[in-house]
Image (cartoon, rainbow, N blue to C red; front, side, top):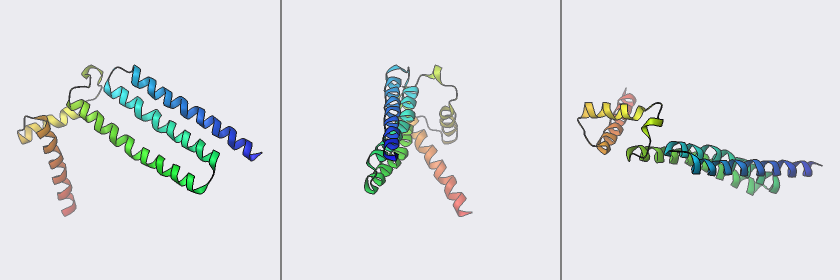
Length: 144
């Protein structure tokens, strides 16, 4: 009886995870700009993978496999937001982001503030100056 319930639950998780992966693919193909596509690629993809891995764990039910699947999911949860952040930042810096679709643009304000205080004109130099300013702030905080 329990075996049948676990098989059905695993099948439901497989279907739901596959549906979310399909939605992520559709979002990548249909959304108009980089940031929307990036959102579609990361949000449902991570949840869909989690559902697929949970379904697989319910199907196989051995300790080694379950721990391996947990590690896969943890690495995915760690790397997906970081890679999405880097893709979004690179897209912003190369002009691939549509300004008319942005509601809040904090990066422009931050880069402009760094340019004013550091007298930099290149966006790469502004990024480097912002990182250096943050590092200096953290260093002063740890020295106190």
